Image (tube, rainbow over the protein chains, first blue to last red):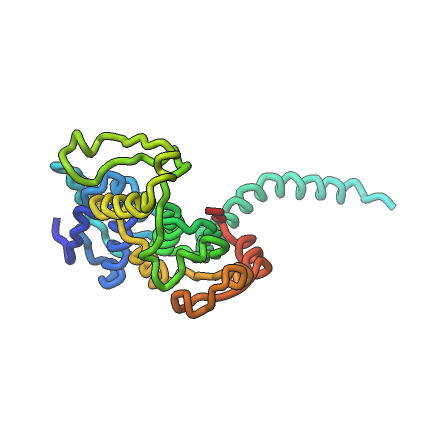
Length: 75
Length: 204
């Protein structure tokens, strides 16, 4: 999937991945796509809830090799 | 004077129709109001130790990231969390049986040992709390957990309102210069109306 910006949240724990994502999204344009990589297992549910609450669309959420990859489209 | 039979019939029809339409309309309107409202949270932070410093700042910074309006009211020992320097926040395992005592270094088998140290021993060793605190700080860093300083800055940047209880500021002999910039100083009468309007209200 194409993306406009990438956020490496590996090694960060709750709530830092969400806070960094929020900050990064704020610097982006509406419709742009952010790719996030995290290692916090809690981030799977947290990013889904974050998307639902803020209206930024979670395009995909996947796990490979204990890393979690999210694609989020800015509202 | 009673209504004519025609009017009574019309009234009955209107009543029936309203019963059919109103519940759906009200639900629709409530949903509309709920969706247009910015959620809000108010927290009372009363604890002044390193462990209890986390819940208020984690919840506040996350709520702000979700777009909520957040206010934290710091009172009693919670005032320690808004001092300019929070590097001296401590955690005490003494009388705290819920706290795992594990080492943040060494091989895995060593790190998994839970050191069950009796209270009487903990109380008798000078500097025990300081050692426990530095071990906790190491564990926090090892786990990629943010520092209190960092979470506090993120909260303030995101617009979380900090209010300190003026009464306890005076009671403990603090001055406004001891605290971070951007604080409000007020009392219970200021907090309660804020809490009343909040969707989430927590006492920590």
